[in-house]
Image 1 (cartoon, rainbow, N blue to C red):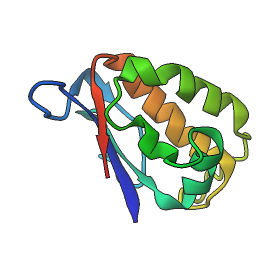
Image 2 (cartoon, rainbow, N blue to C red; image 1 turned 90 degrees about the horizontal axis):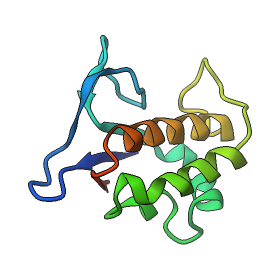
Image 3 (cartoon, rainbow, N blue to C red; image 1 turned 45 degrees about the horizontal axis):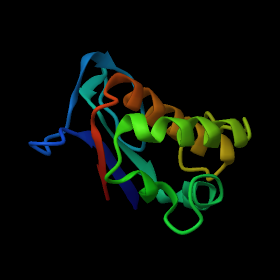
Image 4 (cartoon, rainbow, N blue to C red; image 1 turned 90 degrees about the vertical axis):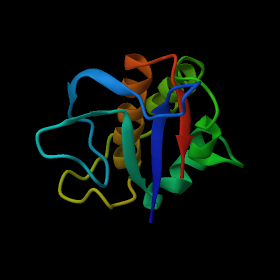
Length: 120
C-alpha cells in the first residue's frame, strides 16, 4: 500500500507538470524520468511522518495546502530525520528513506509552489 500524492492545479484539479523532466522517485517511477508532479510513497514510512509532520494526520497534513505553504514544514521534517537511507531497499521503513521521500515532495513544491497537494 502507498500514498499517491500529487500537486494539482487549484482550478482544474489536474496533476501539474514540471517544465523539465525530473527523476524524483517513489515506489513507482518512470524510467527516463517524468514531468508529472506526482509520487507514490510507501506506508512503511507512515510513523516517521506522524512523528515529524503532524501527530494526527501524518503526511496527509499536506492535502489541500499549497506547495508554498508546506515548504517550511517539509524542510523542518527533513532536518529532523536521520540519514540512514537504505539504497538497496526502498520499502525499508528507515528515517532516511522517509527523508528521501520528503525531499522529493519539497522539490515538487519548489517547482510549483502554487499547486495544491492532493493524495491517497
